[in-house]
Image (cartoon, rainbow, N blue to C red; front, top):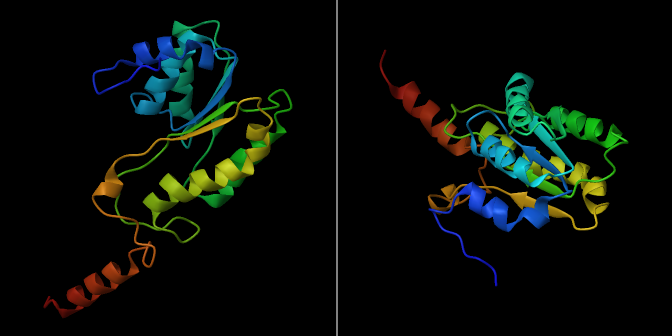
Length: 195
């Protein structure tokens, strides 16, 4: 019978229950900076002996810190890192091309799209999209599609998208995903202010 989990369930309990699902698998996780949910996840599942952990992040020094933590606590773990800035389509394409060039990694069993940014100052990505939308959604969508051949080469492929419950506060504004209307109103209001 499947076990149910709640807010008090520990990572160790889940990993113990899913040990057979993790053991021997190639697991790729985006966004593994030290101290975040991605790092905690990979540090926890390393106990179940995946055949390879691929850790990605836009800051390779931070990603390497998580790699070092895993290797220090699980010396048998095989871990690789991949630079991946999900806020730039060009960088996503570079990261995907690098992964696809790894002939010793013929498949990815589990892709966990975990990386994200939150409550950042308004900015546009290099591709002209609001940066949070680009990083949290568009970058993951592009990356997943670019490496789909490696995912589908797995005997039991799985893609997991980690998200917040921010959608409960407000849905995606499909007609104005870059907040252009809000910015025009702000600019108008500012233009009326006496200096």
